[in-house]
Amino acid sequence: MKLLEKDFALNQRGTVKIIAEEPDDVWILYNLITIGDVVTADTTRKVHLESNKNTASRVKLTLHLKVTCRDFHKDSSTLRVHGRNLESNQHVAAGSFHTLTLERNKSFDLEKKLWGPHAFEALTDATENSSSSSDANLAVVLLQQHQAEIHLLGKGVTTRCSKIEASSRSYSHKKSSSSSPSFNVFFRDVFAAFVKHVDFKTVKSVVIAGESDDNALLSPTIFRRFLLSEAKRLKMRCIEENKSRIVVVGSRCNNNNKSNCNFDLREVFNDAAVMNLIKDSNLGLEIRAFKELWDMVCDSSDRVCYGPKHVESAHEMNAIETLLIIDELYRNEEIEMRKKYESMVKSVKQGGGKALVYSSMHVSTPQLAQLTGVAAILRFPLPGLQDMDDDDHV
Image (cartoon, rainbow, N blue to C red; front, side):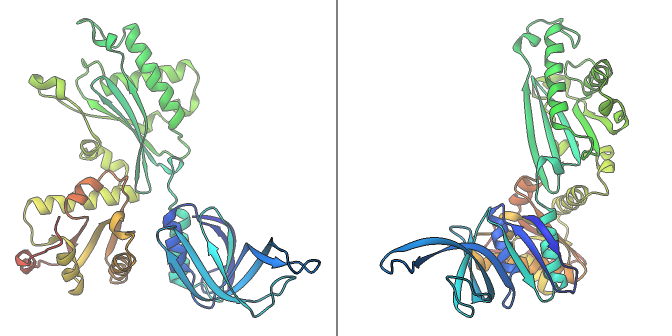
């Protein structure tokens, strides 16, 4: 959702000009626009010209509708707003009823008599949480066998923006090393991708992760050294001045299983130093919450539950401290299910708990999906929940 113009404040009358960019934005508009609001948008109408009553043509005009009802169409991701036209024009009389179709990439104005806390928060969240690589606050350079990947993480989204393959020639000789010409080419390719995708104006920290053995060809320590050396040679001050924000993490491989020594993002976030870097961010909160949940599930704790029926029962008892849900459920195409989970998220927050919605691109989402996609850390033990059958488990 993009906010184009803003002329309002909390608990006051005001108007905004907004544009929906994603299908989910249209659903947010469905919840944001209420009866009595005024929606202004361009549209077309078929009219009969005075010069020739038998001929109709389409004309572009602007309607100002005071909303009487609205309908969300999930299949087309459109919102039809019905209401009474407030201002007459050459083709449409004031007081007549009309319909506007709000869709993606089509701007419109929304006026409310009062921007209450719920509407204010909904609009703020929708416009601030539009995710893109430019929103990333953590970059991870993942060095694996024969390849490197660059990931950008932020606002709940994990994006792999580059994958660089090492030439097979790099491994063709037993004595090849990180100083060989083929590896210099590979490191320069990774360096070029790093410069292209990592912007220190938004990225707060960089993690270079991989096998921690300094004798390994793709050692993160060796690549960090190369990165800083290349930045100094090319006089790239943006990297030189931020070298303290570039950290290395790694794991020791079993010497008998070097061929399968691949570091992944989940292992990166098991590192205490990495979690300390992002401890104050939403990403850090989400990863810590899921790790706490997962550890409690593995320990068979009665202070955690998962599955729709178990979570709903815990919610009815006001027992949820932290709710974790994947956005496949939270933004479900079935309107009734979507309303149910949105209501639960809102209720948990109002009750003083936390509600975390995990994007499909979040690093923790695959594991959360294994737990049916909805789970909760509880305020107090509920051992009885373990005995309840949950037919919704998958």
